[in-house]
Length: 540
Image 1 (cartoon, helix red, strand yellow):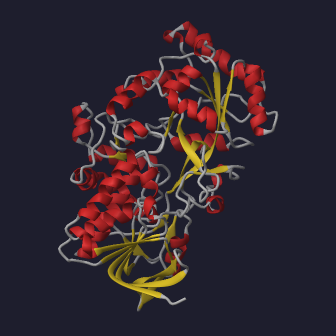
Image 2 (cartoon, one colour):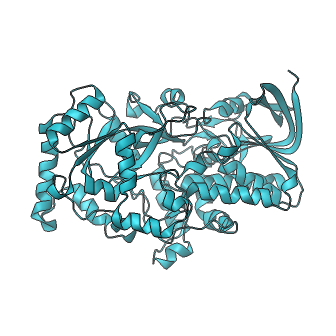
Image 3 (cartoon, rainbow, N blue to C red):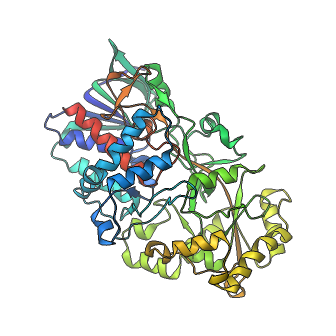
């Protein structure tokens, strides 16, 4: 089959939010550059994982924060970022990217997106507060009104309606397998058009790599598993993009790009199987927002600890604790009332009220609970178990795993002390989960979504609900090392001429801008910023 040949001033490999931001910035330039955007997926999935995301974004000192009386600053945000990241002494570029992001995110991402009609919910959420390592000192998680689906829709519309739209060509189902070079400079890319199997070559003056990391390949997740966590779990669900398979990172390494920190990843501890797995994503998982009033149990039905697990403070810590077990899955135990009030799923798919910008429906879900979502998951997700007694619940949990790990006695022991403290009243609470619930409820963004000291064995709140949860892959925190213009660097720290990497492919900047942990909402924001800065440098 004859090779297809294309020419462009700039070729962008990857149609996620980083590639889209780069394309839009290139169209905005005065250089009238011809841009070719290549994506391996179908046109309907243009936008990648961002389109599926919840759409939370980390910003500093915004009007939304000031309106709520939240005092924030780049200095405070950087202090929090550096503490959570725990950079090594030689993490020079990751640290510089962290500094650049906290100083530029509000002007160059928040306000830039606002110019394209992207709005944010007025209540800023407070996540990743930190357990033993301090995290976000103040709320910074700005929720896109419309979720990540609305974010992508707005920017894609801006591309199509742009006055220079004729300068952009987008080709889908094009699998890039090689970066081409000439005299040490990037000169284009090559691959296969999966529409018809024909090989293709793109000749371009500049190449931008925006095709994600490795977390869409569970084999690579296992290969680069963080060694201090021990052996990888028996089951790891896939919460990443199926084409985030490391192929472009290998291609970049072939042209002497420096790949760093691939053992640093952002996984979630509360993954469940998707009710309707997509055929192109084996073990497709969803990330639950774990109900904070539920008891987090180990694989054997005993409460994990000694410090009880609760979400909202340190996602990495949760993953670590689950992975310390000999069998690396866990359970959330609650009653129906708690589940209806607090259960949520991260992402656009199961947050239709927010995705469709239905304010009344969203507020009703907050006030009354999301019965529809709970019922759907109980009926369709294999990891949900419902029972009217502890004996029945233990039997169903064991039937699900195929092993007699859980006993009714263990469940009773986990519940008894917790419920007894609630019965005595707040002044006698001596349980860390109850103390943290009290702390959470002091902030309005959490109070409306969190029960007020709800007992598990409450006759008026039955039946009981148990949710089996697995580690869920999500984002690579390492990747191609870049300078502050998103230029790809060699192991000798020199830029490879005309080659750029953005978003997750670049470890969200510098090959690892988040270090060990993310302050959440920083993934989408760094995708936008890295994409824009690469385009600005190309356009001069």
